[in-house]
Length: 420
Image 1: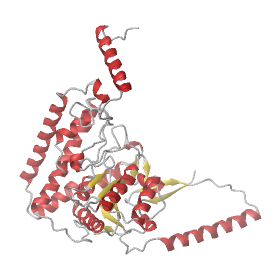
Image 2 (image 1 turned 90 degrees about the vertical axis):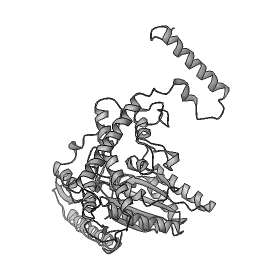
Image 3 (image 1 turned 180 degrees about the horizontal axis):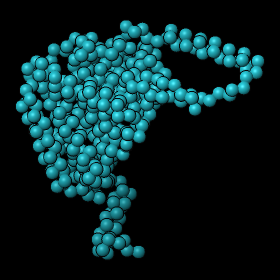
Image 4 (image 1 turned 30 degrees about the vertical axis):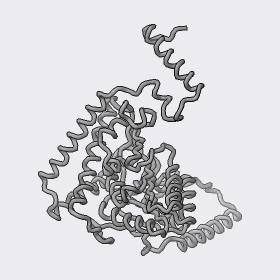
């Protein structure tokens, strides 16, 4: 099979297969080929006319730390250090999570290593009263919003301290107190939910903005298009964040879309689209702050394409070495958002090497204590599975619960076997 090289938006080069063609040509096939070439030329010309201009924010990648294409957001020293500390806590927490999964102590994990600046920077631009409708790779947001690490770890174990009582898939957090809506596994469903919540807040006259996340693969779902269309038509106060990390599990970006960028898709729905260096937390914050302010002023939604990279596996069930090269990963590791932010803080004399070491040591101590506490908690009781659906159990559910509990008692009496 013939192939051609194609460079993706994250700078890596991959090989894309082309269809085989018959070598036999008749005079009619030559005419057909000529027409085909003319058609391709016309299509190419049409596509070039519809592309966003290079000066558009939908094409240009905005940054602060290196490029300086957007202004420094002017955050206080305390806020800058808080953001860095949250990134460190997230990184250390996730490193431990993957070890726990490999040891068989937790069942599953979805890491966000390499993407910390993207989701922490966007969430930092919100008010605490604003609602977040996450995907499954934003583990740093609950930490930023004050959720104790122990509560997050309880969810990994599905123990009695878990808010969802062990019923939810691991790493699918739900923290109402932090305005962090329950994560859903089906790709893209949260986008429409965020638009609906934003519309409800608008009708009530509330000063609320919603923010929702998806990956590059999520833009191929119907929910993405429905959500952006509805939000655009009704000027919903919602900010969409597409964390473009170049891969949807093992599917590379060039198999997701023929669009020049993800941000340019916003034009079809009459809303602004902007691209930002997702590993530059200051640029991420500034671009998001502008989008949030715009939404809060009643000017409608914005689509932010955050260019970042998933350094680790898609999940603990994935082996990324089967579909991407070491050189690509090494290139993105050199753009580590923590290292870049650290250099900035040191240039501002806000962080010394000793202070940095102390932050990492404190984070390790925090995760160790959280794991120890989580492993000492019991599992939810069998009877608890009937809670939280109805305020008062129906007669049928009470009967089912009692029968289930009696079977459990009988099993205990017969040394682990159910009596016939």
